[in-house]
Length: 91
Image (cartoon, rainbow, N blue to C red):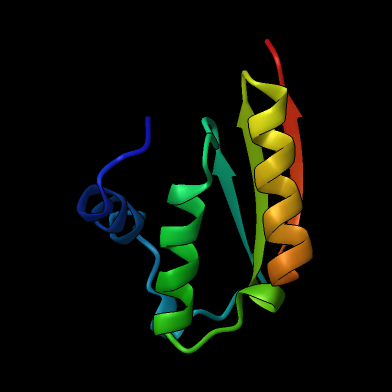
């Protein structure tokens, strides 16, 4: 079950990063329960709103108990959005 969009957006904003003044070469995002990738997508929207290209600024580590979920999210972000990802599944 996915989180409501409002809650995903709020959680993406509460990470403490000031994306508008970001001086790091990239951001590493660890998603411990990747599921549908909704939280990662909310963070991607925040990066885009700050004027950064997530293909150059974001590295995502997707973890999920269900291997299909982590592989699907990994495939979608890496192939469709050119975002560097790594997936891990199981216990």
